[in-house]
Image (tube, rainbow, N blue to C red):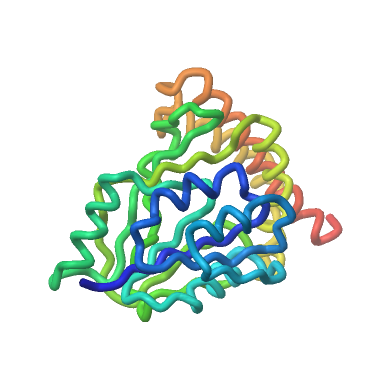
Length: 248
């Protein structure tokens, strides 16, 4: 049977990390790269693994690459601290570990929750993520935000989802939105991109229309409407901040 390593990056995740680690405690190895947590994160992690490394923050992609580089299994699974593997997904992964005819990597559906509400539309599900792959076949790029693994080879799809307990409240969303939109703007700035007036004017309302109507967020009721509004503002801020980086 092939060995599986799970890698996770953390920073002050004491509210999430135990449930996350409980869901993968069956793995052969768990690697934690922690960014100077000052709560109970490290103490909780030590209950599940001794493969804990504390490092300065290098950005999402490079931090995850650092964690991946420390794994030793034949296969790896990248997990965020606010995510959990379901039992069915664990069984699917174990089947792959014992099979000879497999792809080099697998995308996994992700079921996300906003303030304990499961969001089924608006582009939030199935939201496939490339998480399981042969260690020597995968790597991360240099994205500052919305980082994802890349695999050299064939990629398949799993059926069972990761459970993602994302934003706990509107305030939580707004707090992280400020960080993520700044990172997004800086990424585009480095690529020489500039924000045009039509992007500021047209993209936010189109984001609402796409999420609420085209992607059927309306079926999630109040939360579908709320998320369409929040992501419209998120879209506006991305391009407004990009314009700001060029001093208007």
